[in-house]
Length: 219
Image (cartoon, rainbow, N blue to C red; front, side):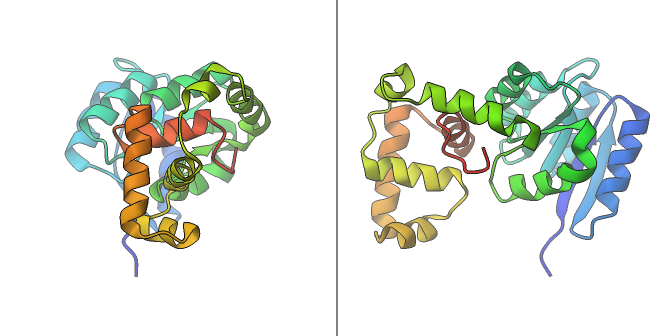
């Protein structure tokens, strides 16, 4: 039996927190390691428990969710962060992704989408609430069209881009090698070159970059 996904919750609304707790505890493959009602206590909790996934509200006292996500990216980079929020504006989504979150779920759809998001980010994927799909795709594609600044500055070979794209989707070096019919060593070389060209230092950097280029299928 596979290990359970360890979850930490942070929301300053007791009713929401209770609902999230029930949602997590109803799934056999999830286990709750702690909960908090402020950004400061959430940071302390996550530092101490090192969960697989932290689900955080974007609006919390002391430290808001965007700042908290950024702190966690710096201090606990192995913890996947899902921002759970009422805010449906694209600007908040972009802030969350830029801060290091790899999941963004609206509270109104949490019952349907949160567990899916947890499993997705644990696999190394990025999950964005389906209600954003069309707008997010249009935004990322518009910035990656030929002639745009982002497109002109990529400077990647076709192979480098393919390896980076598969890596962002969570494939292992061995899986990428199989798909592209390359050796694992060659895949690592392409990945290293691409990351160096784009100044991508961590896996989270690669995922965020892939998001801005419209490389992730679910968008």
